[in-house]
Image (cartoon, rainbow, N blue to C red; front, side):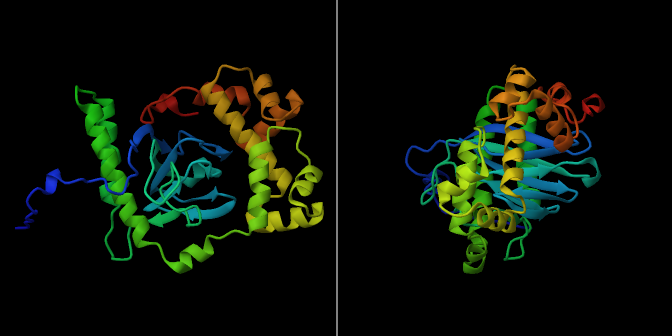
Length: 307
């Protein structure tokens, strides 16, 4: 028999001392993604007002987070703080399956709003922590319970999901805090100059942006800027601009009714034909086909949802 005895008033104490006063985190999105249905590259994008959690349950791939490539495998937990640029490879041959959720209204003590880890910390963790305990089943079960309550709603389903979300956050914090070591923090530091370059591109990528304008902003030569940026992130500045534009276009195709031509112009492609060509080349399908497949929520278990 396994038995635990809890202290008196345990259930009535303030359980959320790790939240800033007034913080009310809530679930914004919940996904179960399978690469056999979502067979494409989700190129560079960021979320302005949410923090995203991704739990890999099957398959392997390479994701780019803040320009740094990370190999992901089953049991890995990824954290995208708000405004962190990331790219996910869901190509069919990766056989990738993962859970993900977005959280808004989160403000942990000692961190900026909508951040679960310090921005200087590596964004990938394994659910088997340094104490040897594997928390993958616990986290995946929390995701499944949220799917159950949202898929089979009753009068208190939203309340149940709210408590499940707090449990998920608490479990993730246990994992991230056990992984905080000086060595990891040191590895996470990018050069200040490269971060300035990337931040400037992230703010202006929809504009008529040139290498000369970026180099002038950070006060270095175009050659030096391009060299150190590619060495740091694996993309040239121009490649990074292209992927950011395509990633933003994917978001607009999913969430708006604007035409592909309007979207192409909005994200910085002045030529509609070039936008269609480069989008098709990088994503693997045309903008219109992408919208047709991914603009609406589909049941992952429905074979008709497959591209």
